[in-house]
Length: 311
Image 1 (cartoon, rainbow, N blue to C red):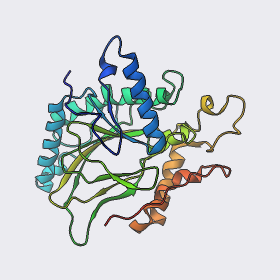
Image 2 (spheres, helix red, strand yellow; image 1 turned 135 degrees about the horizontal axis):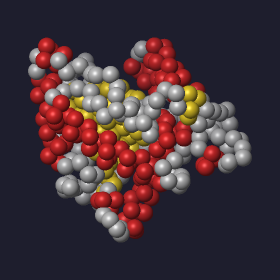
Image 3 (cartoon, rainbow, N blue to C red; image 1 turned 30 degrees about the horizontal axis):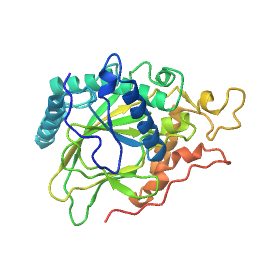
């Protein structure tokens, strides 16, 4: 298994977590404990952290980004040949299949289960409790993105948003442009770390954790010099799933400590879609993101920090 050269101790405005201890059997107990502590801290503050030595070979990540660039540079008639397929277990979404399916398999079998376990343990939950929300694994999805370089009239590649899932794993190229909203309300650039992956906590984990972990607000500021390419793996759940704070975190006998009321996931997605229709102006991005607040109980609303717009 290839590991990736990156120094998690280098100064960053975000956590860079070395996962190599979790591929060491046996041992490395102290290193594992420290990694989980740092994940807990990152998820509580902003909901975003980077991982290195995550089990995906560097060459697989490089090939994936190269295929994405080649795909988006091609003619439209070629792109249409790789239209998304209906969700099915182990299905990849787009692009020349050999490379993309291999990367998708790494995300499905190695990265996502480990991140799921780490978030579960960082919350102090019983083993595998979080796994019940995606045990079928039929909703996993992987998408490639192409962001054009900035122009005088367009400087935002992706407006502020949160992810309506358990979590998202992102692969970005060396161009940069991704920013996340830190707990103090400041937008922080996610400077590229070679062969790292970015983990964004989603709305579902925020509710399940009773607000202990944050769904991260993030955006893409269009790069000034050249186009940007990235890949996103979404760890989804089925629409029939019931989502409410874990009793293990709020008390078994009463829901008095719950900060959110429960909901079926399909209801949440429907509300999110309606919210987009109500707020078509990109300047209303924070209103669009505020869907989780609809389910926040009156005693403890979930407030978004103030933030500045991109220059």
